[in-house]
Length: 200
Image 1 (cartoon, helix red, strand yellow):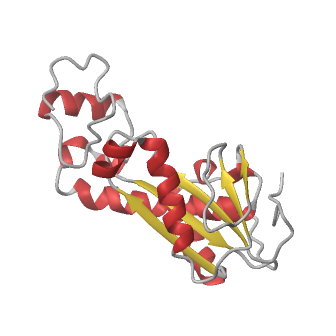
Image 2 (tube, one colour; image 1 turned 135 degrees about the vertical axis):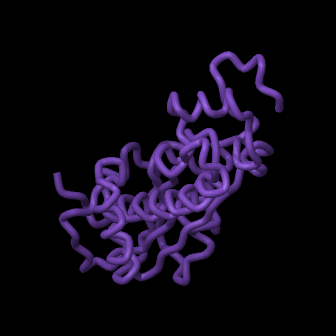
């Protein structure tokens, strides 16, 4: 199924998406992208459906051709204060605010969003596999978040964030049980299934 160029048929339609919502460590990262009507790339899809090498190949292409694009990290201290849903929406809001061109319409992956700058919007479940600009935003959010997790991996290699990117894998949870938590872990999350011996 090929992705559609726009939902609203307005020229300056922005797609936004986030990555890392379900992770135990690291930021939640959102991106916003306005693509020109001429944009076409048959490889572009929901970032979860793409290999790492395809995502990394797409990112410079999206950034080169986009009318405007941006991304934002919201870090664990904020996530722990305002909860992950609010942090995800905040990340999307901030990425939209950072665009060099103000969008006329916003399409959002998922079913939860809050109004911003009086711009009309539509939430679209599985939007990243339906619309080009949301798919592009999902690629930027995922690749920039992965870059960040690989960078902090060097500081705490025992959690293997280079591989698991902070998601709740068995290996990541085993490392939390063995070594405790870091400043990059989300303390408001259930970090271990039996969270009894974990010193927060």
